[in-house]
Length: 360
Ligand SMILES: *[C@@H]1O[C@H](CO)[C@@H](O)[C@H](O)[C@H]1NC(C)=O
Ligand SMILES: *[C@@H]1O[C@H](CO)[C@@H](O)[C@H](O)[C@H]1NC(C)=O
Image (cartoon, rainbow, N blue to C red; front, side):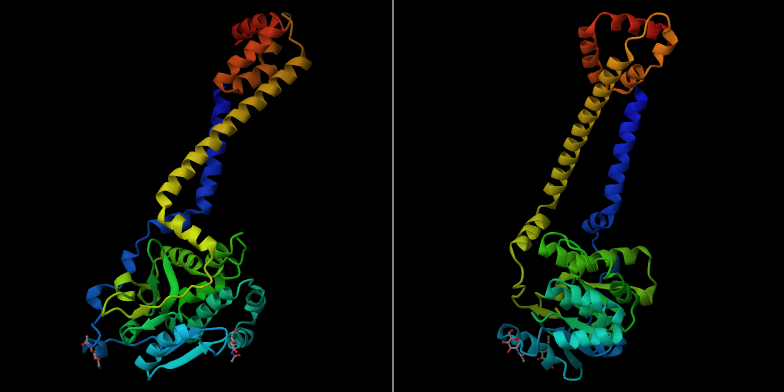
């Protein structure tokens, strides 16, 4: 019987490990604090520091933003203007729908079908930013992010993205040199991640949005990139909130619906949800175990009926009969039940059991 139990446990372990493997990057994101690549307080010069001039500026002085057309809504005009005003010497490019599509068609024609096929416009707005950073380099800023100080100190890193709480990175402010391997990988992976996940919010997040970029980032880090290929992380304090922070956040995210609130709730309660997940997994395991027992039991009864209880003449055949084997593989608890039913069928079973044992 131990063989059956072992098999059952092994199959379950296999399924569990396959499940864990397929979500391992997501799980590891939960505990990733990005400390290894964080841009530290101490290395960033304060807004008017003379140190800024002494740092290299390898990211091109270009600011990229996206909107569907040239008419920026009033709520975001102030934020947009704050960035333009602070950087008169930077090139400014607004990527409208039309301009984005023309750019993809001309420079990345292999991606055009995917780009056109995206169900939600925000997916195009997400993906175009990775392409323009990989192509031209520069700094991408969401329209609802205003600038609080000049971006020059951030031009010193080959690539940087912004940390988000509680997990992962965001794609609302990021910078890169042209052809940085991280953004090249991001644009390479977009087609693979172009899948639908039932809820629009998850679909957007995981196909082109912050969750997509976080997973790509996490996998990218596993290859231990060299100094030039590293992606540095702008932490929360440097993002907004303080006078020395780089950005100011204006309200936005108008496309977030009910499912967004659900996801945020899940993000805040992930410990509880993980616990719940284990309980559900345990319950499913027990149900499987029970079903397995029932199936073995039915199989045993079925065979028992058609094989006929062997006679005393051939005890050796009896000991290796399918009924015996099935019974051996049956969970201990259920074996007792099966014997009880056997007894109801007649006393012969008891005798054959004795014979079988002696034969073993
Ligand atoms: C930095 O300089 C600008 C003008 O060049 C000034 O408006 C601002 O207050 C200064 N910031 C700090 C923190 O001194
Ligand atoms: C941009 O889109 C808005 C809203 O859809 C529309 O009102 C406006 O006229 C458009 N602007 C241009 C320049 O087409």
